[in-house]
Image 1 (spheres, one colour):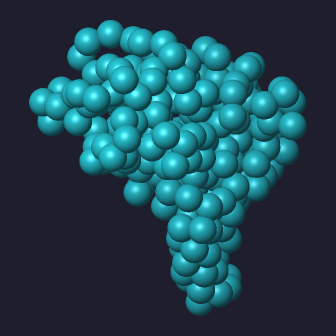
Image 2: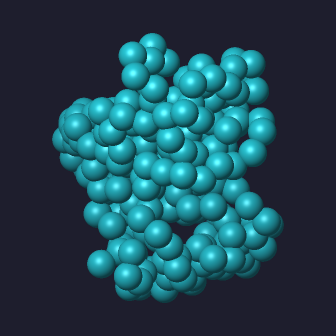
Length: 220
């Protein structure tokens, strides 16, 4: 949220404060971080960003001076489950209709990863698993969405395994396209060594992909 406040302040040339989930940690865009923000500190603020649902709008308003007209914008942390579920249902129905119209066509199991290509996210392990699936004769295709310093190494590993026609590296693509690919996938995979609450995992589940993830506390 501090980064969002910074960007908003820079773009709008306004004094923007962001409040995190503890309600008492603020960030003054373009200036400095402040702790224990109270109403007297916010009299000069042009806009307030608050994380939803902590604090809710009324709690954020309680930090403002009495009768303040400063606008409060709620910054949602999480995923819009309803919207994503509806989009996933729509895209899956279209896919099922297409396949039903071509019953003799063989379709691969669609696998997707949307994690950055960093060592932490162990995309190399995903590729090792794909090699085993190919050895077992499974018909699959894997979309690797995202970019990072490990990409060249991962591309070389796919080439060495002879999987170029079964693995697609997409790099950075627009969010709408990511949602489309995830919704049309059967399996979402993430084998991160450590993680917090993964928004990409929540999005994939909302879109209807079956998650296959590492056994770490954040995923339990």
